[in-house]
Image 1: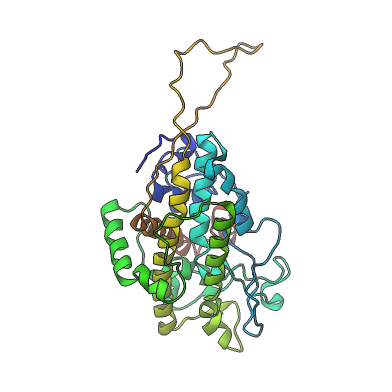
Image 2: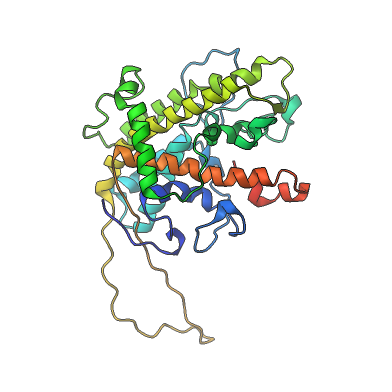
Length: 356
């Protein structure tokens, strides 16, 4: 493993698992809510929200051709555009670290079926988002299961309560959970089911083309689970914006999510093997400081310092990253659940709106 010193924007998110949750944290304009803890300086940007999910309408009655949707800004193309600096095209540690964080995070997101699917019904969800349920975010969970996720999307993000702890979690505990997942879902299980290449541990072909193919294949594979995610809800001819999942469905969510976490960990290993040789070298030590230049008003001019990113590449670390992403969403889900009785103006706040 190699560890890189962090600049202010990356403090507390400098090891590989921490990198996985950073793209969610930067949505937060302050640290007043439980899901926004950790940033040294809150960033408060929603500019990258569309990177986290693929807009792809699902219907039980339409046979799909196995092709990804194409539109400007879709996450698969965004990640492909981020590959050149990760594969040696930059000497900037900030650039490499920034793009690595998004690749790790979005690759994880694309293994959750409601990050690659949405249900369109204008009569239920209106015209604002083209009738989309925003990947299950607009389908409210009611009944006992609501404590496991306030929406259908959040229910899947939290694996229906299978991984309830909030980030951060002690690394020893994460390693233990990762080992359990690897034992229950070994790589051979996915190889036998034609979901993982049998050469996943071999030196990969690290080109933009080959990594795009890997990403597209993984996304299409996750898409096959859209019917699992929406099936019970849509089977009710009178379905509306509220959904009371059965115990059988919750069991399916837990087992499917655990399997997807393990699979994403194995796939992440291949990606990390490609980018790890290209971490830019540390900048040379700065010369002895000189008095800062002065403006016409006599005020100092600020300068920035590039930082470092922590990095480890192994299958276990890949699974740990997935567990940390789930833990971070658990923190935010419990806070959302606590706010369910809050006034409408609170529930419509930017902090809550950024939970997709």
